[in-house]
Length: 442
Ligand code: AMP
Image (cartoon, rainbow, N blue to C red; front, top):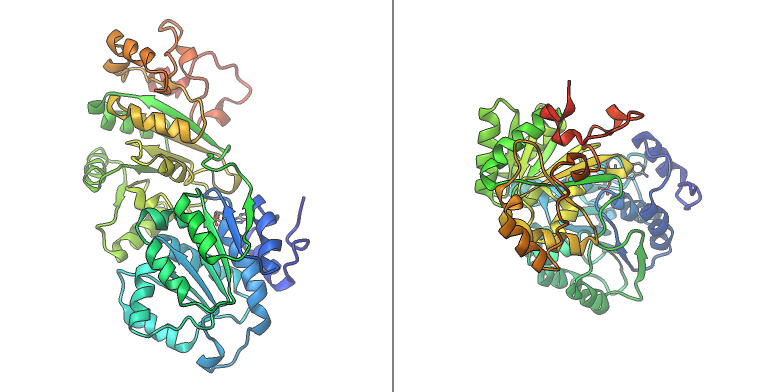
């Protein structure tokens, strides 16, 4: 197994990694670090939760540290590395990782994102800062107010470039790249590579090295996935049943709309489950507070829109629940990537109602998976057992559904037991706990 030492990182960085509890590089780190350290432009396809932040930060810190200095003069600390992210949460998370990675090295760093007062950010930039993590919009604000200069940037990282594309930032990104010196390194990280991203790479990158450690659009093997068929009107009850019955310690519950997030949160609170909501209409300080409460475990269930699908790193989050399937199949990969991070085991449960069959098809196709729909006793959906429906399903070859197994053989409907594998290890499983009253919990 490769070590950080073998990747060419110096001892002060390795010491910081040891303090973070990192023992060996992840696959993406092992592949990307030597390549980026040599100064190549890089196109990296990395799944969420694979350690991609360190994959671009560590080689960059290694390169920047040669001119690191303790001078108090701001002129001695120009912006030499710019990390662009699609969301404030992701920017904030990279910034906190940098706090750890940089603790033995005199490189200054800061983060700039919208929704918060711009003045303290200006003050930090004025002091001089080698590494700036920024969201696109707020960086443009600083550029127009001339509070940042990019003419000394040596390294640009575009993190979650596919998300930037989805959010309509790609033209702004192009504008920003044009402000950089000709001689710079670009490291582009993305879970998926749409044609526009390839075009961006072709236009601005110099012989980029392709780094791929997992197949595109694949879901991490460490995440056990279940699709649970249910009637729409029973979703809230089933959600509560799953949380209480499986004794879920913490989970993110994803919904597509802010209004659904609010309704589900309200419902859970009414049922005495400590829940909080996270979506784009919340102020930045509310969002950060909610995340802090969730990380501190005073909130058990975080109900969120896709604003939380990326950039959130809650270590060892055991469960992700899709209350609704995402409208974009790619978001399924990102959502369930919130669990099973850095090799930990996680479970993703998706509640699927009749109207969501097309979304399910798209997800199964994108992820090349063959997952069966499961049912839970007491919540069997009327639409799945309806013979008319079954006929319709069979006539549609691409709908991704497996015929539900013999009704008299409930064990065959579900092969695994979400979240209870450890409890049952070594015991013969004859029936899926999902189908047992109270899910088999005594
Ligand atoms: P990322 O994909 O960068 O969001 O990282 C996901 C999680 O993995 C974060 O909690 C990192 O701190 C953690 N991590 C990154 N690299 C390693 C490593 N080599 N060993 C253990 N954990 C890591």
